[in-house]
Image 1 (cartoon, one colour):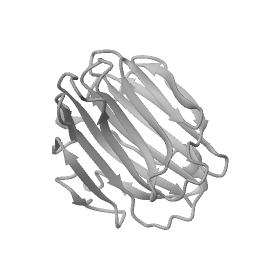
Image 2: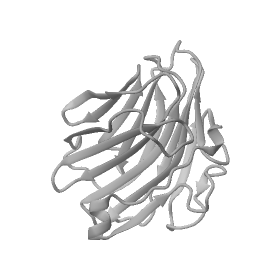
Image 3: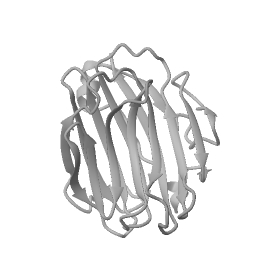
Length: 223
């Protein structure tokens, strides 16, 4: 079932009107990455790297945590320098457990490793990590539903925005609860080019075994 985790993603509607260019597409050829290295298909120069317990399935990338070790995935953009003040990040995912630990952290990082903003998923909560701290913005159930996330980084306005919708795993709807919408200030005021989206397990020591399945991920810049 998890191998069918896919979602059709595009630029945010505001960026589509203004014009945008993809700088990363993890499934441009219709399948998830087969392993670390350059990503197949356009755009040029995007890539994936990983460490620890990461499995490259045909329809998604699986990060495992078992209490003593865990997986880390980096999806790296191409086409730098980007010469932009605005990005959109879209992805889908499924988290199998609702426990507080381990924490699944998804961070938008620049070439210096500085954070724009991030999302934590743990304990039945979605949490936005921004310059205002870490805030609970919504909830998820223990049913391993699929969450679809769209995040916008407005560097010129020093703001990040996130919208999360949830559907039964492997479906396109209906939504199982109202969309979650939140925003906060960019964490690092000197944030540069968006270099990578890092997906990693945190606080894994002593935590039970679990997995996170990451579906298609698309990053676009405003022209």
